[in-house]
Structure formats: structure tokens, C-alpha cells
Length: 251
Image (cartoon, rainbow, N blue to C red; front, side, top):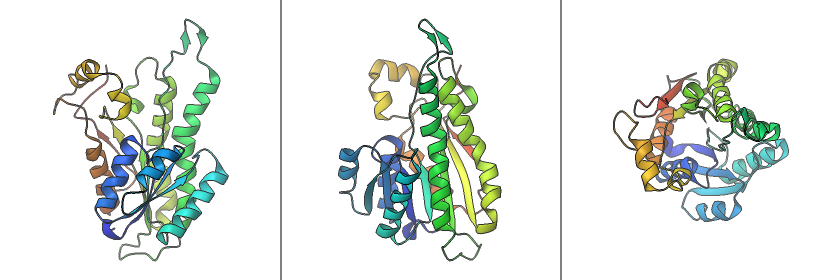
């Protein structure tokens, strides 16, 4: 798939990895529609050439259906999705205040895992309407897992479970949709320089970066975006989850 002719939905596109991906893909010539709940930042992102915005709650079937319809109207179709919408919830299974709040666990799973699947399944319906290329390809889905899916630390039960689920989607979804020419992959990022990490302060960021093997720094969000583009453009990459972490293994 030529990125310059791609029509891409990026969820969580108003900030962090999603914003970096939307900006990078639009700069390469793709038409991009971002889904996000943050209307103020979404509208600001939509001032970038090639980017439009839809206020979408990825956990809601009706909201995603409306967002997909908006994306089709704006771009004339959908050929790729990059799912970046997600949250982090930190709490021990049993802590000083009792058991992990079930509603917080459920919300993490709903946004990170159910939300990714919700957008993927609805966008795939529109992708199936595309004319196939010479390989028979009609679309590509890139989900965002995490190295926490494999190296989850204490306090990460909800987040790790949600991201392990995302990693587990790659192969069965690829097998489900091979017959209609849609590929599915996932990126499992390590520690990236996003607003969430920046809020920890320079000393904490330096400490976190010291555990990365090489290069010994936090990831640049544009590096995530570059891998997302590679997954969109590489026709033989399918059903795979790739770690992007500088060989970091969480202790």
C-alpha cells in the first residue's frame, strides 16, 4: 500500500503516539482522520493539512459507527487503521485500600482492548469494499500493544492484561480477514517520550532511560510512527506483534 494514497484512521490521535503517527502519515501524503475524546486537542490537530477530526469514544458502538461514517465522508473510504487510544491504570491486585477496584480494571480493558477491536471490526467492513491491489490487499490494521504485555510489572495487572489481549488479536484477526485481503499487526512499544512520561520530570525520565539497552534513551514517538508506516506499506507482514523498545526488558 502506497502511503501517499492511504486513507487512515488513527485512534487516540489528539496526543502522544497517536498524534505523532497522524502528523507523520499526513506529512507523507496520507489522508488521516483522528478519533479522540479530547475535542479541544482534536480540533487543534485538524488544523494540520491532511488531518480531520471526529470526537469518538472507542468503547461505544454508536460513537465508532458515527466516526467511521465521518471518516468515509472526509476521505472517500478507509484503507488503514492505527489504534493508539489507551489508558494506563496502576494498582496492586490487593493494596493498602483493599482489592483492585473492579470498575478501574474493567475500564482499562474496555478502552485498551475492546476499543481497539471495536474500531478494527467496523473499519474492516469499509475496507472490504475497497478494490484490491495486485496482492488482493484491501486494508491494514495496526494495533498498539506494549512490552507490558510480556514483562508486566507489579501494579500493572489491568494494563498488562489489556495489552496482552491486543497482542493476542494479531494472528486470529489476520486469519479471520485474510480472505477479504486485510492484514493485521501490532506494535509493542517500550518507554516513549510522551506527555505521560514527561510529566514525571527529567530525573525520573533519565532513570527510566538508563534501563534501555541501546540506544540508551526513551523512544521518540516518530519512531513509533515510522514503524506504523512500515507495517502499512509492507505487504508480507501479517499476524505479527513487534517490540519497539531498544531491547528493554522490564525487571
